[in-house]
Length: 380
Image (cartoon, rainbow, N blue to C red; front, side):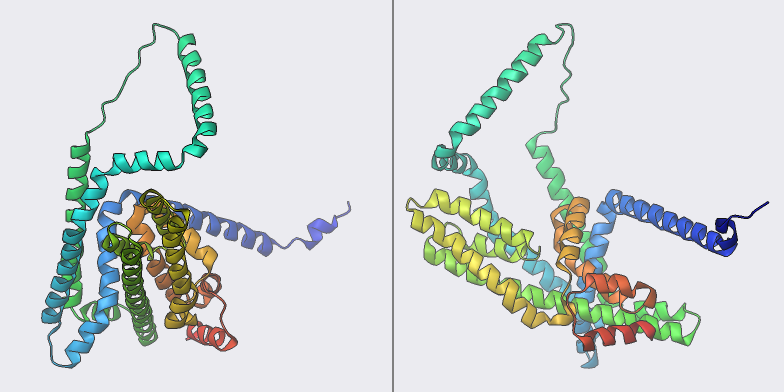
């Protein structure tokens, strides 16, 4: 009986290897799905914890710098946390007035926008009227014995109270945990090193921890300074152009700029709408969004790449996917912290040879020397 070439060439070890690879990918896939589900459903707990660790990574170099000059970590941690709470509280207090005015004038703003966009309303109204006619016909054809059940939704005040309580609780957990993390100094690193078995593992763990801390701290402090400067420039420009509530526009520009691409686009759209209802001349309507666009382009294409350097450049596709994913998981706060988390993951991957390819995907265009440096870290 003849033996086929397929039976001769097939190696049992290759078959076992393919089966094991399939099982490994399946396990990784199930783990990732479970991890995403955990992150989504446990966001009320995980969000303040992640925020506290990001703040701690940013401020730990400052605490360590002050400790070398004789200031205890507990004292510097208390001062830094108090300053952060005071800054956030002052910003919330100063912006509460303009935001309340915008909320109260929302109907008037909507009416003005409709008047300005009246030329585009005719086709839209035709579509709406057609859809209403279809809905009327559908309801008329339904059985008269069918009863509609309407679920009563909670009121606006109840939603606002729940949102306010949730925000205050998240802020309290974040700042208390941040205080403990900063006050502990290097205790976290010492505990991490003590549980590792070999000296090489201890060395690698410390190298990774300090690299992540340095890169994330550099990124967040630099981006925060850039965004504050952008907010000041936008506020001054809006005040000169006569836009209402220029301070609010400055704060909005600074906060939105933490979200790559989407934040700048959202800011431009909002400035367009307010400029449309604030000015009658088409020239004056165009100038505020044009100034905002120029400032955002200069910041994104020139200022930020120069100050951050090529080492922290990230793949734009990876940034967009990561921002979209974290926005879906944790809302606007997730969108703001998406890039710092991506920086942490990239730095972590650069230290492991098995994850170097994924770290390379997350990176922007690196020079030959920078690629060699990353490869050296992965082999250490």
